[in-house]
Amino acid sequence: MKQLLSTAALGATLLASTVAAQAEVTLNVLHAWPGHRHFHEDVANAFMEKNPDIKINFLAPAESYDQAHQAIIRDALTGNLPDIVFSGYHLLPELIEQLQARELDVPLAPFIEAAGGAEWLEKNYNPAMINLTTVKGEIYGLPFNASTPIVFYNADLVKKAGGDLDNMPEDWDGWIELAGKVDALGDDITGMSYAVDAWPDDWLWRALISQQGAPFMNEDGTAVAWNDDSGKKALELAVRFVKDAGMKQMEFSQSRQQFAAGLTGFTIQSVNSARSFEELAKGKFTVGSTIYPVADKANGKVPTGGNGGIITTQDAERQKAAFEYIKFAASPEGQKLAVLGSGYMPTNQLAMAPELLGDFYAKNPNWKTSLNQLERAIPWGGYPGTNAVEIWRTQRDIISAVMAGDLSVEDGLAEMVDETNALIGK
Image (cartoon, rainbow, N blue to C red):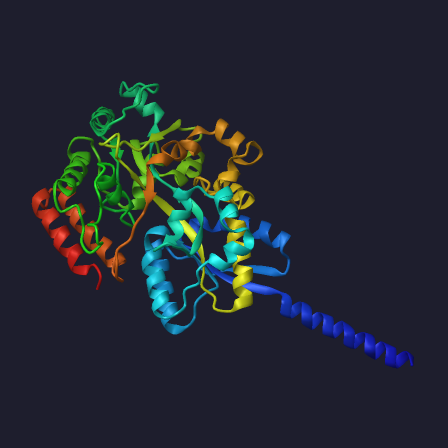
């Protein structure tokens, strides 16, 4: 009898272990930018502590949003998709279109309804944020990181150049004039950096159009809308950065290193640089920041960068677990971890409570600058079709040539318009 009881007990134990093993889910997650790994892991660790039955396994981070996007498109073709993807907002429409074509898209409506529906959504997310992960009226993701371009300046160089830290410029003419004065401080000093010609994606180019209050695409989305004065003004401004403001054309990472070394008057970057710039500048110079200048004060806008978590697994149970994770990542607690680990602005409005980020922002104004222009933030749109990555690489080469003086503004604009429109929708 004792042997029978032991056997029965052993069987029950094995059965329980089997059930537990079946209940445990490991989710494979892909995000871009290797430098973002640490705060993604902070969020995941906090989530797994609360949800021990769900494990988060990060795949090797892609080098950029573009590379992550291309990897997911390939995975969709081979049937080897991860469970969760943190997609750049500007590439999300194209990605969803590709997934829909293969019946692999996962709208979040049923999960949101289970979480509390419209009331839950309105309580947590400003419409400007949830619009970032909405494609043709359908919510496909929850916003995780968000940023708008802002100005980071070297307060020491600005003072040496005669600038007034209490009255920083509010328009491009003022910034370019200040940069010229900073540039005159020495041969090793660069007046400014606006690396639109080397940026990994078209974020800063779109900003040069939207800050004028001008549309980026025509009404039906089949062609660019900057084939006129708005495109010309954008390129002319980029040329002035080099000719009048002392900007040196260099690689994306080099421009950041130059500023961190204390050798650039000011640079236009994502707010997520606040943490790294302050750490790198500590003991060398004081970092300040202010909002992105717009030519049209009434209608000028800035594109919102960052990424949102979308579900790509096709298994119903894994989808439930995946939603729990992206919901946590976009929750007040998840956002506190993500913001403090990066510098991005919070996507969940409840994260602004004093005990979460409110008190922190009061003591760290550089981190809050992006929030000061939230009313100007617009979604960072993509292009119809599957050529968004190729379009930007083509545009970037032309912009670089124009800024270097190898191509006139007029010829460069005509070439950009022709090349872009030829690639849209194909």
